[in-house]
Image (cartoon, rainbow, N blue to C red; front, side):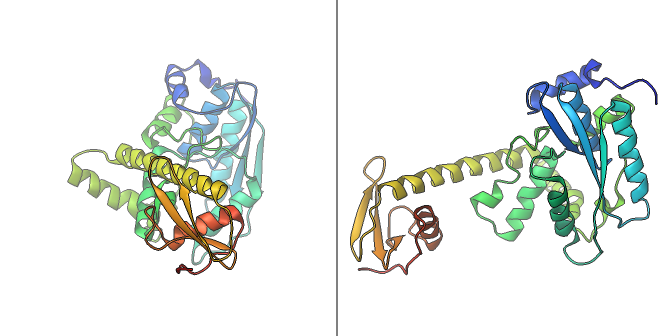
Length: 289
């Protein structure tokens, strides 16, 4: 084993850290280390931030070169002087492989593991949600949080960090396979949109997702306000005052609280369900008492 790599000594690494959201120096974190550029940069930056880092690698066993991925990830952990663990997953090829692999990793790693999702991943997630016809919550993409500390970085920057520090990473060939919808969005849809828009649209998509998350959070606050002010009654219409002159007629039928069909605030069954869920009540049919 050669000398331990100290990424904090590098100027590029130090310039990227302010855009990351790692916990305070000395905090214990566990990084998912696939061996790819994003997860490798995540681990390098986590060490540079002063965290006490350990790594975990998922061996999917689906490709002949999976052993190589594991060895590259293990070598990175060794160069950084951090613990490395390999978890073998029991997966078979077939439908919904990406989703099944993701669920298996989450179950094996635990909820608090750090992942190397970037702004590019977030933009792809927004487009995939749009294709599903998702609402504001789905179109909010990947929410920022403690497990996504490099979400503001670009994929080009994670590769740049690895190249700058001369740290080997792998290119998973499945990331270019057209059988996976995300890959087509990455390699076909986003470049086409950039060509049509004459600019890189990833920042725009990330910004739109942030605005939709804010809208959804505001709607949740409004619903919570309704739920807190509402008094359940049998077959009586209650008007709940909101900020300003707006009122929301609510109808209680059989113990279920729902907005009246023509309420000023989106009297939809989806909204009714969210209100009722806050009150732990069943959703009744929208009708006049």
